[in-house]
Image (cartoon, rainbow, N blue to C red; front, side, top):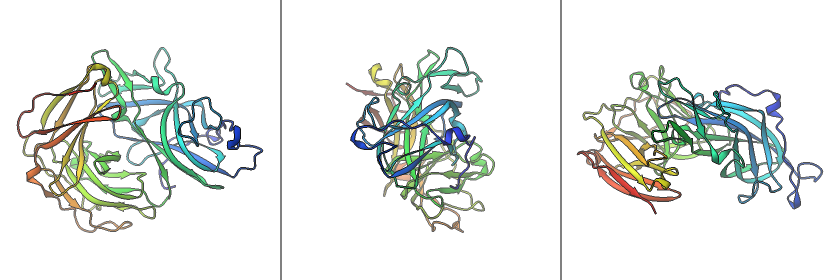
Length: 404
């Protein structure tokens, strides 16, 4: 597989323990069932306002039934012994960290559980965050992932006599939630599961101008306004790698401090080659913003809804697409959130190239003035979404999203 594996595990992780598979479903041993292998890696999207985000993984469990309970037969496990502490922020820009692998019956697995270790009484904590500039480690409260594990619905196909590579994409930015002025933080894990089908593709590569890359802009690939993978470019070279990305066609969205939102539409991802948005000789530089960004505040109510809330700002182009232009963490105790939104017109360009080759010409963006400063802010709580349209060309009163 073409990727860098940080801290590649010793043999104990590559020979993970097996959970017994009972009943009529067929077990690991003695049943004659066709066997395959599941290999699991971890990666991360960029974080917001933290110097480190640590999680300690004890095991990854998979089951062929999406409704299987923790104590049911039929689970297979990748067990990390001892449990492994990982800084998620070391896993951006295409870097994967292999957790381990296990043999298991061939078939389709529709449930995955990520089990984290419990925190001790003193630092270093198993699960912790270091807020930017503080140098102080603060424990993360992780009640949902310590016992039965964080449940993820999946569709993992494990072929007979082959290895299925699965990547858990842990979005640290959306997973760390501040709790008012208590000095405490919740870990509300936001994790996606991607099956890697090929060593040769499922990757988008491009370059941001170094002067822009130094400000740690966000680069994401989105489908119908939903981010699929995000990263930050290398601060020196400006190169970004989005990997792994399922095969398909996407919008690439660039957001940078002091720059307008910039989108490349129709970016193809294939399994047979890398997709290059541009070349290092022709780096992208989103246009400078003429106006200061607009501050927007708001609250999700009641307080009981805040712990499971998420808020984002969508921006639509005149002829499409609609993209997520910003995401705001919601305070788990107060429900407060805050955005900083570009006022100037967003810009876009159509992908011009062929997977496997670097386009020879620079990406030329075109501004969309009618959409300047216009956003839809969405708040979601437990699957229920409410929206408000805003115009950031003028001051915006605080927003309130009430949920029953």
